Length: 131
Image (cartoon, rainbow, N blue to C red; front, side, top):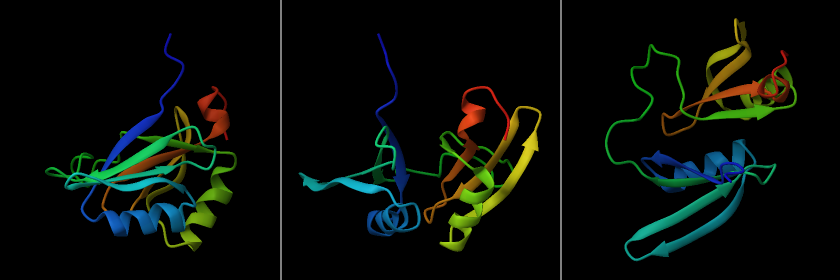
């Protein structure tokens, strides 16, 4: 039986720049940073140690679609959305969508330094509660 998600692939233009973002501003830990033949195998782990992001070189256009559409394929959670938003903004993380309450609950969206967008919502929302 499937129990969860272990790894997600995030395509980036520059692996060094992406590594600085995820380990610096986001405080993720490096899991692997090795060469696999001609390719660099680069993985970082979320602070809760449940999910690994594989930072691979982008093969085409960014996956999030047109800039005017606020969407993301990856949703992160936090304990306090307002506090996390302020902390990440202080570290230089860009938020195209600050925290806002929608019909489905509170959420926000941030962008990495590679142009990828990620949703952020409070942990309570993930369990069916609001902010």
